[in-house]
Length: 309
Image (cartoon, rainbow, N blue to C red; front, side, top):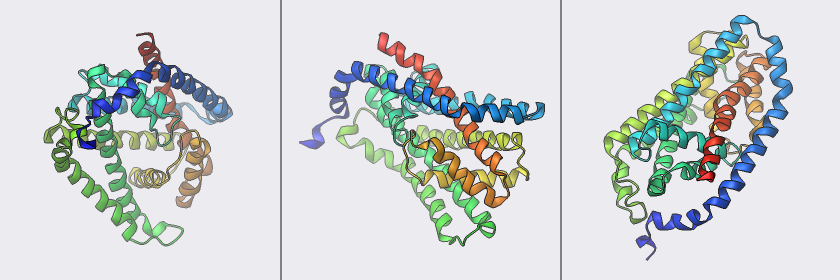
């Protein structure tokens, strides 16, 4: 009896509550973003005062990569079929970020994307968002594990090789599971219909877009580190960036509580490898501002537009 329930049926109670949820979650998103910007105001002013012209160009280059970052995420929804156009995918991504920014592990991203999706595509949007998020974890695991092996001699405490090796193995297993396992998931009755547009080719494209997106925000972080005066070669700093992203991915926290935790992780890890505390603290904040806060602000009109409809 349970297996006869379709995913669309499971979403009907959510659809009835959608107007009230839109008002509540939009208000919560506005309040959180305002509090975050207010808290970080002094840090923004201090960073701006310390940066010279060349550093501003590097920071502008990092910010200029943000649309590419979001476009790759939108293309995932496009190739899977839950977004009919790239523009529709953009709207879903931005709406999801507006709600995901203040929920545990950005779980509100699902609700934001559901709100932006057409009624007939909401079940598919839910399933495709999950596929995209799982695919995005894989390069974080693989690159972080590889960086852990490369930087192991410089760790301040012994790191068993099995730990980063396990991360690489999990990434490989996850990729195989996504490429071949979707066929079996599509046979599960609650998911029937929501995975109709998924194929082996589209899943492989999602994995490619996920790897490219990981490369984009790694380059963003590299540019920000250089803008803040961090020294070292690009290969070393990219390895350190991959290690930082990996360590942060192991900490399940709520984005509201993430205020300060993100910076604390960077402030603990990066100075162990010779990065100054100011660069460690500022880089974590600036990447958060560029890739999360600004897109969350951009997504609020989409939530309000859906509310007006």
